[in-house]
Image (cartoon, rainbow, N blue to C red; front, side, top):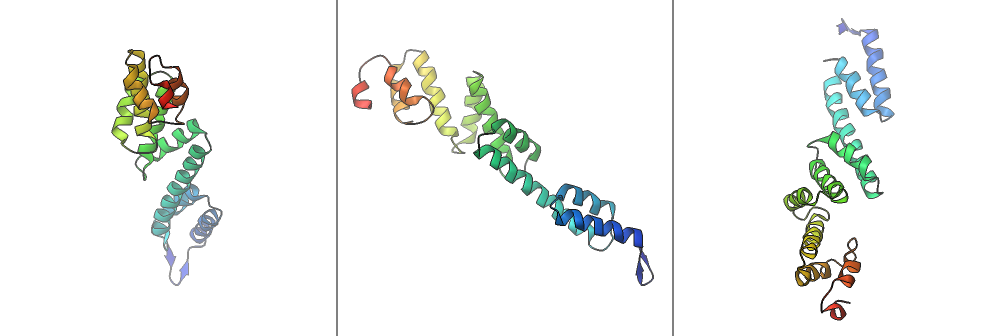
Length: 171
């Protein structure tokens, strides 16, 4: 609040504290501090900016976790971002990968199908379809799918161990 030509000292100190948080990249805390200041100076605009920076920082951290293989941590971070950018797609994708690892292939296949070409969703969908075909004894169809996935998971070794003809040509 303003006192004539002078600013309220306590409010100005709180504003400077918020700026310090901002400058140290503590965006969530800076956002909260600016919101507490209400309409003081440019606090509302700065709060909005800090909120955006905080979401971007958390998104970047989630991507780093994803690309360094910390998938559980990445999933948790993406979940916290909800609809920010493509965080929901990453959340769905990592959930489906986790389901694949725990044997929930039907549910995982539904999620992968809904993701289209996001990351390796289509490769996972083909791979899980090939596994199902292999389990059903449909070796030629499974072979065709595994052949299209060289280097994906254990596709090559599964291709090598499929019964029936055609092994030589697939190598």
